[in-house]
Structure formats: structure tokens, C-alpha cells
Amino acid sequence: MASERVTLTVVDPDGEREVVLSSPNKAVWPEPGITKAELAEYFQIVGEPFLAANGNRPVSLERFRDGIGSAGFFSKNPPKGTPDYVDAVTVTYNSGRRHPQIVLNRPSAIVWAAQMNTIVFHPWASLATDPDNPVELRIDLDPQPGTDFADAVTAAHALREVLREAGLEPFVKTSGNRGLHVFAPIVPTHEFLDVRHAVIAAGRELERRMPDQVTTNWWKEERGERIFVDFNQANRDRTMAGAYSPRALPAATVSTPVHWEELDGLDPQRFTVRSIPARLAEIGDPWAGMQEAPGRIETLLEWWERDKSEGLGELPFPPEFPKMPGEPPRVQPSKKVAANWDENGDPVDE
Image (tube, rainbow, N blue to C red; front, side, top):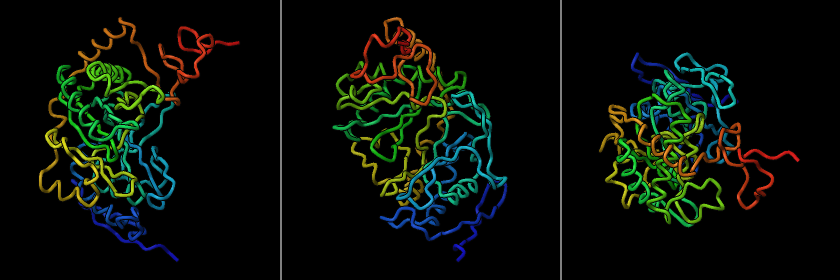
């Protein structure tokens, strides 16, 4: 039996397009009963702020063939049969490989992604027109066991002051789960490694001010009950859920831009696929105009160099990355045997 199909008319800036949606009544989120058709409708409603935050960027699609209860997988390259209204750009990955990656530039492309069973959208911090140089400094404040969203809020307020002292104007959104994402628009004059170093410098300054509440320790065994500043989300091809992206969680929560004044006492669980359209209609997009006055990261890079001169050097990279210059050993501190590693963090051949 052929699956049920409906044809949606989607309004793009350059005219209307028809997008076929198969299995429209399939439950994507069984608990609240949100269907594939409702998800497609959501994307049409939030298309403008969604594209302002995530459009014209390389993006990875996190897809779930049978809703959130099924195994998810990532699509980076445009799959076979991708329509011509879905764009692409060739990017360089950390391995040095180059491949085309999906770019979403119009509402019909977002609805097509919903047809492809996409739930979570993971945009790069750079634009498709210049994929090697980020336009945002991004910091993920990740609550560790024993901490919660309220602790992340406290850290976010302090981080805002740190970034402002460095000449940047930060914006904030919920992660859609337990944490917060702090973004600061920047002039795209530095590549990813420089921006990562700027993030580390900001994280270390925050850690100095809140040593009992915040940590930049990569290894979980060293983090304790503190908010982790996930500096590795600033790396090339490392992404987090984009603004207005749903999450593959039971309540259909959404990663939601908020005003700083909203943070205290905020319940991020109330931001869902069903509630966000009314929120946008009532208050608009808190990130509107975010890219109008980008800052520069030179002050943070000065802090990075200062910290390096005081013995605080490179931090670990994700395991799939090639070994990086100055990187410490990729081994848990509790399992490290000093004699097995040289001064460059490379294993010593026996």
C-alpha cells in the first residue's frame, strides 16, 4: 500500500513552491501527538527567524525515520534527488576532505528537510559565502550532574559581562534541553581555531570568577558539580542545535532565543513546537537584528596569549580530530602515566 501523501504550498521570497509531504499523520513526537504535518506547519510559521539564524550556512540535518523513538542519523551532503531549491556549498572538514554540504535559504527547503524526517538542525557558525571564518562566537553552557538550568542561568549572566568587557555583545538561547547557548556576533576575519581560542579565553576568565560554579575541564572526571564551558563546540564542523530547531526529546522542546531579562526563573520546557508560534506572534524574535553590529575577538585573543604566557596552553580536541599542535595527551588524567607521553602530548613509542 502506498503511503499517504499531501502537497503543501510553501511561500518563498521568489514565489510559491509545492512540496510533497509523505506520511503526514506519522507521529514524530508520540507523547504530545505532534505529527509530521504539524512539524511542517511549524517550519512554515517560524521560517523567517529560523532562516535569519540558520540560513545561508552549511547545516547538518539530524533525521529520524520513525520519529524520536527511532535511531537518528546525520545528513551533511545533499542526498540523491535533492530538489534545486535546496542549496549546497563545498566545505573543508577537519580531516582535509572537501564535500558539498546542505544550505537552507528558503522556507520550502526547511519543509523539504521535514519531509526528509529532520528534527534537529545543526548549522555551522560560518556563512556559506565564507565557510572558513565564523560570524559567531558560540559558547555552550552545559550543566553537569548535580547542577541544573538555574545554575546555567547564573553562569550565563556572568559570561555576558565577560564578553562585554571583551567588546562583544552576546545573545542567549535555550538549548532545548538543560543548558544555554551564548552567541556573540563577530566580524568574519578569523578562522575556526582562532575563534576556539577566543572561546577558551572567555571560558577561563569566567572560570576564574566562578571557580566553584564553572569549569573548562574537558574530562568529565574533573568537572565536578559545575557548569561546563564546552569550548569544543567552537571547532570547525562541530555544531549545536540551531535557533528555533526542535529537539528529539519527548516534549518536543525547541532551542529558543530569549531576552536576557527573561532568564531568571525561566522554564525552558515551556518552549515547544506548539508554543513557539504564539510566542513569536506576541513578542517577536529576540535575536532580530543580531548580526547588525558584529564585534571583534582581538581582546579575547590577547587574553589567550596572556594565559599561554602564564602556562595555560591548548586544551584537548574532540577524539575525531587530528592531533593538534600543543594539544595535551588524549587520555583521562586518572589513566595517564607520565612516562608514556612526551612534552608535545604524543605517545612515546616503546
